[in-house]
Amino acid sequence: MNKLLGRYKVARQAARTFISTGKLIPVTYHRFEMLSKAMQYARNERVPGDYFEFGVARGLTFAGAYLLAKKFALDISKFHAFDSFEGFPELHEIDSEFVRFNTGEEKW
Image (cartoon, rainbow, N blue to C red):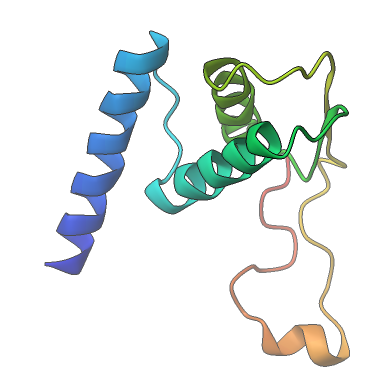
């Protein structure tokens, strides 16, 4: 049931994104919420500067950030995306306790 509800939220948010921007960017609900809050904060506090994203992978979050920056009329002139395309490195010491990602995952 939780998995189904999660998919519903993602689909609903994707539909809202499409309606408000005219473009369908499939980002997860939680990622979209995080980006929305970050962009709203940047707008409300008039944070100047460019947008940088590290570990871009397929670029879904990057594309979502671009669309949200335009939606909130942020004055961001440049968007920068970085990725090694080597996947995740081997985990050592304390990082090995974090098992969400495996070595080499997301390699392009």
